Each structure stands twice: as structure tokens, then as C-alpha cells.
Length: 319
Image (cartoon, rainbow, N blue to C red; front, side, top):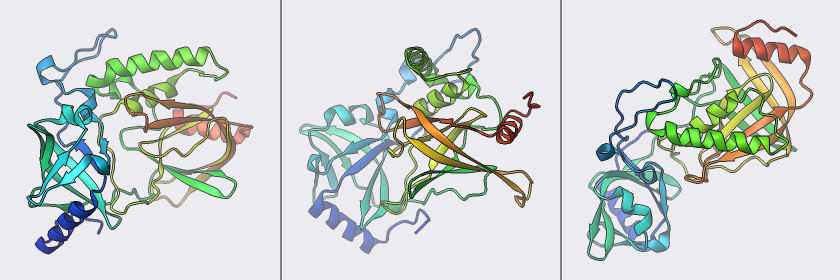
């Protein structure tokens, strides 16, 4: 069930009957990535996508449609009731419609259409199982955050290089204006609070994560707990994030254990275990379910500080 296997005709009929009888919640996501043109970023000047090619930010992020807003007709048409504001940006565009059947993730590709009574999507012949997107633990770094007897695993997210300084150019061109607004907001908040921002490099990774337009990953089985995403590490703090989970509590103390692979074949590893405090939770009002947590180390040992500084920055530790 880990492959995107298409349902058989009999399975499809069972699923259609299930949708008609139960009106389960749906998630609608833009299937096609927004158009972007090649540009250079110089002197803080950012050229964005032409206006006529621009897809509104509201169409980039997934939208949840509640069961009471759905009616499934015998013809295989899903009517979306009282959802105009949510689905308006998707009209005429290819979308991925996802739901769960007996806790198994399923999806189909269709087009949101407008009709006299509202909006609708037609269920196509092809319905597929969601491919499991869990990542294998074969990375240069992995981590575990623990509180009492509860532990949460953390793994690096593709597109975030933890062993080099975050670059503004890594943020999608079409999102850099909004990312800059968020960055300025977070810096202003930091100056008005007790949070120590330091050089602020971690904020670049945070606004990168909050504004990225990649689709949310979907799991093949409903209810599985996904690892948190590691998006930034240095010798002062550890930053993790999630698209959907609300796992960490601000000002709460956790035990962080980071494991680094220090040999190419993975046979040699180095563990750094340190208490930490969630100093700040970062969110964007455009997608409040997406969160980043900045965790500041408490009482990091000098040997571990030296290792983290040299491993992450590639520079010699000055002490």
C-alpha cells in the first residue's frame, strides 16, 4: 500500500458508495506548480511572475473541505456547498482531491468547476492510493525531542541545507516579497521580547519554510505520526517545523538528542544530548497550521559546542 496504485473498478465503486453515504472531509490542493520566470536578485530588488501568470497565494496552500460542505451525487459529482471563498482560487485549475477510506489515503485529479448553484468536481475514472512519504533515517543528522515519556523524531527536510549558511536565493522568487515581510515582522517581535535572535540566520530558514509552495506531504495511512522537519541547526539553537502538527509548547523545556553521521558509510556517528527550551513559535497567518519552533540550548557542554560549530559551519572553533 506504499505505492500510488490505482483502484480496481470494484474498489472504485465501493469508494464512491462510501463517499455518497458518509460525505467524508476532503483536502483540495493545487496540482500544478505556479509558473515562475528566471530572475536575478540584486540590491534587494525582486522581479516576480508576470501578473497574468500569477496564481494567488490562496490557491497554493491546501484547503480542507468539511463533510457538511459536501454532497456526492450518484453521477460521481461532488458538490461543494458554502465553500465559495475557499475554492474560488481553484476554479478551472487541476487539483488533487484527497480523502481517507478506512484510514487509507486516496486521491484523484480533477478540475474545480462553477455551476449555477455553486462549485463542483467530477470524480474521474482513476482513483489512486497515496504513496507513503515517510523518510528513511539515513541522513547526516537526525534528532529526537523528548518531554517526560513522550518522544518526537525529527529529520532533515529536502531543500534546507543544514551544513551551510541559509541563502535568501533559496526562497522561491515568487514568495520572496512575502518572506521579507515576515522576516521584518519576526525581527521586530524579537526586539520587543526576551528572545535572543543572535545573527538571525535561522529566521531565513523559518520564513523559507513558512512561505514555500511545495505541496504538503500525504501519508498512505491516516493517523500516522510524521517526523518533524529539521530546517536549521547551529551551536546556539535547533529549529524544527511541521506542516500539520502542533507538537511543541512555547517556553517548555525538552531534551534534545542529535545524531550526526561522521563517516561516509554511516558506521561512525556522534551524539549530542542537551536540554533545550522552545524560545519561540513562528507562524504565518496565510497558513496557520504550518509552524516552526526555535529551540535554544540550555547548558551546552563546551565539547558539544565545539563539535556543532565545526560540523555545521565548517570553520575552526575559536573557543
